[in-house]
Image 1 (cartoon, rainbow, N blue to C red):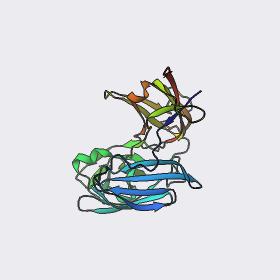
Image 2: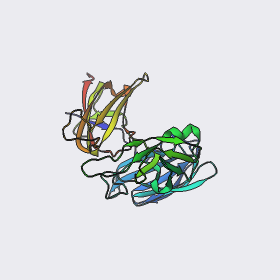
Image 3: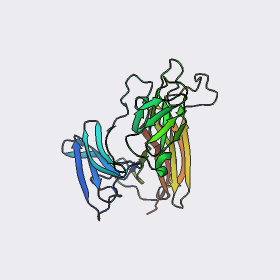
Image 4: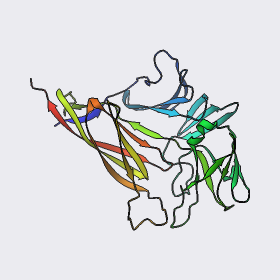
Length: 307
C-alpha cells in the first residue's frame, strides 16, 4: 500500500523572487521569518518552520500581497502579528496583520477578514449615508478591491458580514449607503487566502518512491473548522480551470433564518480526475468570512511500471 505526499520544499527560495533579484530578511520571530524582494515591491514572503531537535521536519513559504498599495517599505514579525509599513501615492501607513485564525474581535460572532480596515468611527453620518474619509488614496483602477460590510451582532439573527453599498466620491472619500446612524460596519479590501498543493508522488510504507507510469488523482476531501465558505480550484496544463465551492449555506436548511451566516466544522469532497503532472490544485477563500483548513485527503489510482 502506498501513500501520497507533496514535494518537500525545505529551505528553498520562493519562485517569484528569482535568483536575479535580491532577497533579504526584514524581520524574524521563533518559527517565522519575513522577507522582501527587490522585484515585487508590494509582496512579502513569510517563511514558517517546525524543528524537532536539530532536524527541520516541516516548512512552508507564504506569500502576502497588498495589491492596492505601491510598495512595502519595511516589515517585521512579533509573535503572531506581522507589521508592514506601506507606501501609497504620497502617503505612508503602518498596518498590522494577525497570523492566526482568531482575529482581534473576541466578542464577535466571527471575525471579518479585511485589509486596510476602517470602521464607522472614521466616518460622519450625513442624513441618509455615512461619509468615510480614508487615510490613504485608492486610485480608480483599484477601488473595486474594496468593500464595506455590516459588523452588527444581533442575537439569534447574525447579520454580521452583510454587504453594504458604497459610492466613491474621489480617491480618499466615499459614501456608505445606510439610513441608520447607529449602524456599525467595516470597510476594507478582502484578502484572498490561498493554499496551493505541490506536485504529488507515491511512496511506500518505508518512505521509498513507487515507480509508476501514471498517477491519477481522483478526488480530494478537505477538512475544515469554523468555516463559512471556500473554493477548490483545479487548473489543467491546457489552462482550463474547474472551481468547486463549499458553502455552509444549504438551501432549505431549517436551522438558518434571516440571512444568518453559518459557521461549520466538517469536510468537503472535490473531484479532480487528472494526472498529477497535469493538475495544479489550490484552496482559496476570496470571501470576508473565516476559513480554517485542517487536513486534505486525496484518493488516487496508480499504474505501476512493470520491470
